[in-house]
Length: 192
Picture 1 (cartoon, rainbow, N blue to C red):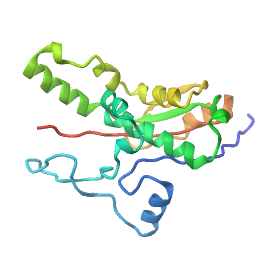
Picture 2: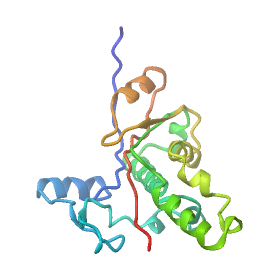
Picture 3: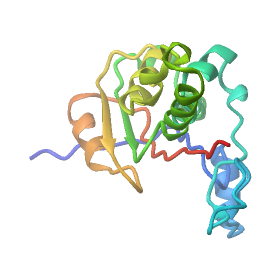
Picture 4: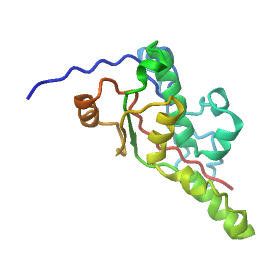
């Protein structure tokens, strides 16, 4: 079997220790932990009040209000990671048209499921957003990322609870010349 080479040209990650590759590298070199007191929701009633949350992520830095409203936080993070990776690569978008998108998602859409359940209980089914189902589908993280940068290559989703695996990257690179991203996400919030 012929071995293929993989070249990583850009990195996009939305993490508790930074968003740009420079921030992440600096945090790692300084041994800075991303685990701290939960700030995205009130955790006072929970037995654990700390987490590794990407509290520095602001979706409005990457997306317009309509995209923010339509997509769950995990998809917002994936779109932001795509944007960061493409910019970090320095590769022109037209050269990425035949690239593939590989996304590893542990669990996505929890906050949208909770919000919709509470809204359904309170006001009934007429107030449920028509974007509810699309906002929680894990495979849409890859599909929307590919759509935004107009890719024609394959999109692939992997169920990865902790990390994005390299095997899917090898599968994609065996047939296509570029892979834009691999992403692991567990974005959840507790709503009152």
